[in-house]
Image (cartoon, rainbow over all chains, first blue to last red; front, side, top):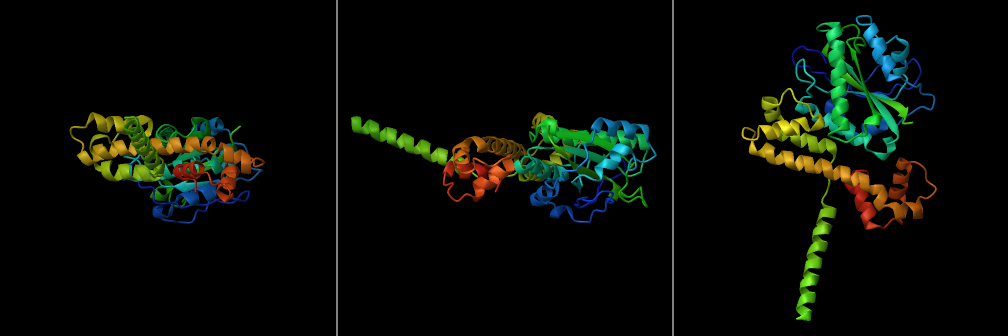
Length: 197
Length: 142
C-alpha cells in the first residue's frame, strides 16, 4: 500500500493470534487458497477475554508517532490479541482505487461478514504500506485505502456500516521488519473487534 | 365458455407458478463470484476508463455507464447481471429468518443466536419446508 510501482501486496496468508503476546507470524499461502471457510473459521474464533479497542485512539496514536512505529503503542498493541487474518488487496498506484484483480478478495470478505455466524461482530480493516516513499504520506494513503475497502463493503455489498471500522498503519508496522521496503509489508488486516453493542 | 375461462385461468396460474418456481430456484451466486465476473469481463475497461474510481458507492457502475459508448458490449451486459446477482443474494439473505420463522419456532425455539439458529435449521431433518430450505441455499449459507 505504498506509491511505488505495481503495489503488489503479495499474499500474506492467514493466521490467528491466539495467545497473549504472540508475535504476528502468518504462514504464507497463495491468494487462490483464500476461501470463505478459511475466513469464517478464522474470524469466528473470538476469545471472551479479548480486549476492547478504541479505533479513534488508534488513529491518534498513529498520527502522533509517524516514523516511530505503532506495534508497541498501548492501543495498537491490543490488536495482536484479536482474531484476524491478513489478505492481499491491490490498489492502483498512489490511488485509493482497488484493482479489479482484488475485487474477489473484497467479495469474499463480504460473503463472510454476511454469514449469520459473524452477524453480531464488528470488524477493523487495517491498511499497511511498505517503507517506500514518505512515511506521513504512506500513513495517509493507507488510511484512505482502508476507508475505501470499508466503503466498498458497506455500500456495494451492504454490510451494515456500524459493524465496520478502518484505520491506516502506513509503514509503521512492517510484517517483515528486516526489510521494511519489501512488498510483503503492503497488506490488509481484517480484525474481529468483538460483539456489536 | 365457462370451461374455456377456467382453462385460461389454469393456464395462466400454471405459467405464473412455473415462473415463480423458476425464479425461486434460480441459483444465486456469492458476492465473491459476482465481482470476479465483473473483474473478468470489465477489468480492462475499468483500467482504461475508470482507473481512479472505486468499487464503493456505485462509482464503477456509474463510470462504466458514463463511458457506455466506449466500453465493450460484453462488459455492459455483464455489469447489469452482476448488479442483479448482488441484489438477489442480498434479498435472499434478508429473507431467510422471515421465510423460516415457522420452522424456527417449531424446531429451534430454545436456540439463541442467528448462527446457532441457522445450524439448527440445517441440522433439523424435520424442516421439510421447501421455501425455507431454498431460502437458506439462496442466501449461500449451506
